Each structure stands twice: as C-alpha cells, then as structure tokens.
Image 1 (cartoon, rainbow, N blue to C red):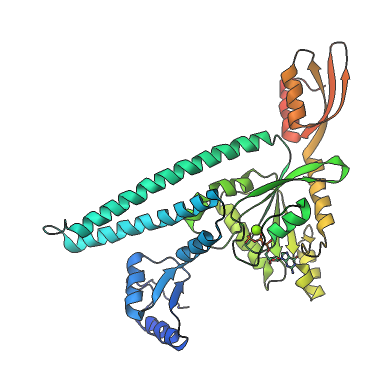
Image 2: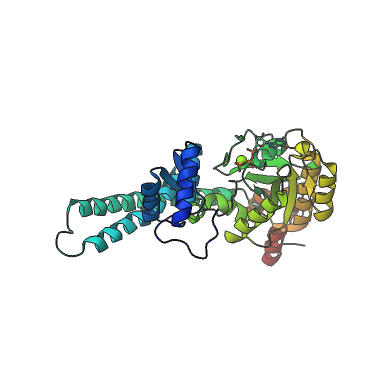
Length: 372
Ligand SMILES: Nc1nc2c(ncn2[C@@H]2O[C@H](COP(=O)(O)OP(=O)(O)OP(=O)(O)O)[C@@H](O)[C@H]2O)c(=O)[nH]1
Ligand SMILES: [Mg+2]
C-alpha cells in the first residue's frame, strides 16, 4: 500500500515504490503482479517494463475468475461481454495513444489498420452478445410473469457467505456450492414450501464483492434484477469472518449501487458453527435484534429461517372474497393462476371464491371491483 495525494499518471504508484515492488517480487520469486485497482493499459505496460513481471488489475482478475466459473451459456455470454467491454476502451486508448505519437504522414500503417479491425471485431461481437442477452432477459421476464404473484425471496450477500448452501438447505435444491469466490454465477429459483400451506419462491444470486466492476453490473443485469424484484431480501453474512459486519456494509453498498433501496431485509448470520466465541454471537444478536443465526451445514437455525420467511409471506398476503360472474372464465383462471384458491361456492348470481393472494394483487382485484 502506498499513500499518495495523487496517482502517478505513468506508473500509478511512485518511482521509489515501484522499486520496492520489484525487490519484493524478486524476493518472493513472484511471476505475476495484481493491482487492487483499475490500471490504464499504458500504466500496466509501464509497470511491466519497469519490473519485468506480468501485471493484471482488479477487474481483469475478477473477470478471469468469473470466466473460469461460468458454466452455462448465459453466464459464459455475460462474462465474455464484460471482458470485451473492458477491452474495448483499452483498445481505443491504445489507438489514441499511437495516433498522438504518430500524427500526420506515415501513421496509416498496418498497425493502425490492425487496431481498427480489432476494434470493429470486438464491437460486432459485443453487439451479438448483447442481442443474445436481451433474448435471455425477455425469457426471464416471461418466466417471472408466469410465476404469478407468489412472494419472492432472494438470498443476497458477499461472495462465499453460504447463500447457495442455505438455498439447498431450505429448498432441497442441488445448487453448486464451493469454498470459492463467485461459486454461483447464475440465479437459481426454487419454490419452497412453508408452514401453514404457504409457499414462496426463493432465488439464489451471484455473490457481491466490494468495488464490483461496473461492466459486471451491466452484464449481470438479469441476475441482479432478481434482487431488484424480490419482495424480501435475506442478507447472508459469514459470521465466522473477522469483522463480519464490514461485509454486511460492503454488500449493502453494492446493493444500493444497483439501485435497490428500502427493500424489506432480514440479516442472516451464517456459519455460526465456526464461531467459538459465544460472546460474539450474543453481541451480534444484540446489535442486530432481527437477525437470524444459522449454520447451513449443520442445519442449525434453518427452521427458524423458514418460519421467518413464512411470517413475512403471511404479512405479505391477504385472503379476499371475490365474486366471479358466471361468464367470466378469465377472472377465474387469473385467481387460480396468481393465488391459492381456498374455497369456491357456486351461487345464483356469481361464483364466490375465497382466495389467498399477495397484497398488491388484492389491491388490483379491488380496483376491478370484484372483491366483496
Ligand atoms: N462451516 C460452515 N461452512 C459453511 C456454511 N455454509 C456454507 N459453508 C461453506 O462455505 C463455502 C461457501 O458456500 P456457498 O454456499 O458456495 O457460498 P455462496 O454465498 O453461495 O458463495 P458465492 O456463490 O460464491 O457467492 C462452502 O465451502 C460451504 O460449504 C456453514 O453454515 N458452516
Ligand atoms: Mg453461491
């Protein structure tokens, strides 16, 4: 780490510090330098020149990890788009740089043509990938519509907190979990059954990280949209990490960054089996009175979590009596599709249907003037 009032335009860090990096790298026999911030392409090159070691920056590292994790066609497309979009301005900068260097006669050499065609290739590919992803988003929107008005719950939180493991515990699902950063790159949704005949849709989402590269936010729009559209967020925190509240705040910042604010949220401190200091657990419970303590691996607290989701769903739903005219098959179909029909009485004027629906759907039905 270096404290500087200004970033060095040429090498990011200062000259003396660069020397120290070089010495340390030699001492440790390092063959790769990773900068925890974004470097301009020219800066990366200058550092490589000075140290004679390959340099990558934070975004490149994250994109690289994402690329190695991407399993499905969708996530591979998302990662490739993010990588290309990260490269495009870098190609451009390289190009501007050469243009300034050359200027005038002799600059229209083969190198320039190469850059231009590179840029065009990247742009064309970006366009194709965006089209593919647009299709995915449309499909997802349709899927979401088909899910009706069931309450949606999303597991969110810093990467490696145990979101997927909790998903598996709650939904009896089989989502890939691993002691890795970004084990999950695709949002998975499962129906979970709750006490009292209730049910909800639970979504597992991609892990968050501080300083999330902007291109990832754009590319992972479909995944992040699940967070935006959820009725309830379960914010999972790895309680076994030192200063775990720090990760809570970091993830909150990222969630706010993607435009999600004031969403009903329950904090879930997970991996409590690894916390040996009971005083620490008591302190967390005191500081965050509504928080739940779980161990997804041992199944501890999972039933309490299920009950908490159930309590939310109950508060989120309403039972209404709807008068359906005999000839209104569409309304009847809608009630079956979006709600849980509890009883049906065929009367003389209409069919009396008692149905459990979400509060927003109840309001919509009231507007239609069919609620008794
Ligand atoms: N000891 C312990 N380990 C856990 C617990 N929950 C999850 N883990 C482990 O923590 C690691 C990460 O779990 P995941 O469920 O993949 O975490 P995630 O939040 O989905 O991670 P990303 O998808 O990368 O964001 C895995 O090795 C899990 O086995 C727990 O309650 N206790
Ligand atoms: Mg996961």
